[in-house]
Image (cartoon, rainbow, N blue to C red):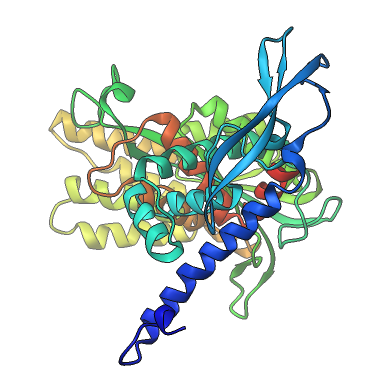
Length: 425
């Protein structure tokens, strides 16, 4: 015992870390014995391959597997199908380690850290917290593989469970669907041929992030309250058409057909309303109030001059009251001899004129609706900003989408559902 705990002055940290290391070693020995006590998945002299052919037993073959307790060696029965000309190892399928030298428990940990922090930091945390020796590249590969599985899994999900997201057949007073875009820094080949906003060559690709949540009540001040644990997220670097199908699928899962009112919140970009018109034609469309105010402020700063703040405040009040026609009158009175500035004015007029019916904020508030898309903006920051926009990061579309998928699962409280579905399939 003294060798385990160390001689001399008491050092609790050294004792507990030493004991953990030794307990892991003992556990790995026991686990190895258990795994090899069932004949390595031997099913007789013959077994069926995936295509129903007869595969012949060849021999037992060892495989080194890293588990949460440490490395173990697993003996597995190997079969060969002469028709398919392929080997079959039933034990690998049963233990969920086909094509991997990491146990499911280790892969789960790698996917979790890989979705939350840089792969290098994830590798360091796994070593420090779980005594697992893996490389940053291995964390990356496992995380991306799990993320790709998650992307495939989302469209196959059944109706929302009762984890705060409503039940199938249950009436939903208000279902909100909000989505926005945010840039993801990508490797040069992923942006090839794409013009940047301020440079000839783009350095980012737009990730579209959507969130869905329900609202049942108002607070004491009459403000809408988002239902607890009722928000789910979807996202990817994808075309508007592909993303539209993705968020529509999630809306159906969340109870689109049972919702009494459906509200689409967005910043006014045309692609947002195109998706709404195609997939949610009966929905009430609302432009995020704070984006509308931002358009006013940006115009005022470049056109109005030193008195822009007071001019903008007057326009804010008009927006709050839903008096878009009054605001448009003020915009039309702005004139500039400079063609560039006049073009800015005309663009603003077009924006507010096009979205006028989506800006009746006083009426929306009287009905108890949210008029801001802060939930999806926060989602963009949590899903993309905090993980994919760290200093020096550059992504492939495939890698970015995998991490986005994992982070959407986490924020939607769907990680356990996803993991259990993997085990069941």
